[in-house]
Length: 164
Image (cartoon, rainbow, N blue to C red; front, side, top):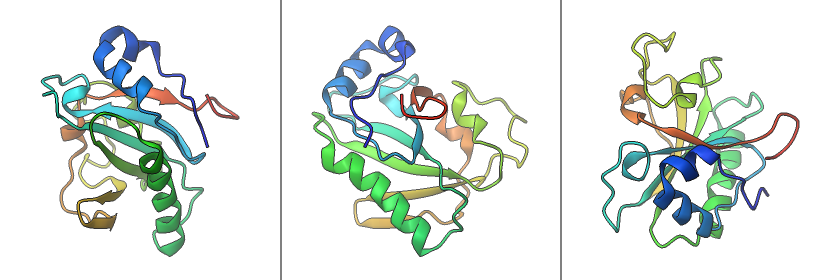
């Protein structure tokens, strides 16, 4: 498990309230997580209410596993690790996201989405696994647009060859 996390200085400098919340929340990651991206109202979009959840995208290295039971098990472990250790004052809304197009999910590494940046058009171009409010599993291709995830901020990234 990866804990404690060394959050990006950009998080501390640009979103001090979100940084304080996350620093005290005991966010713990499964070793397959390579990057954590903060989105939503506690991220660069702003506008959070006191009871707003924290929208975190956990970018996962799936090791090339095809979509199926083995991948579902890995992604379930990723989310369980974070949720079982979460001690934040508000709910964590987590999504385990994985590359399905071989693009490296570069779209999640930039704060603002740029039209044309996604070689596949930016719709249903990555895999999503969620565990939330009675839904557990892969999110089917329902027209999820990567542009709607933005603005977002990478708040943690594994070091090359090991954990951060």
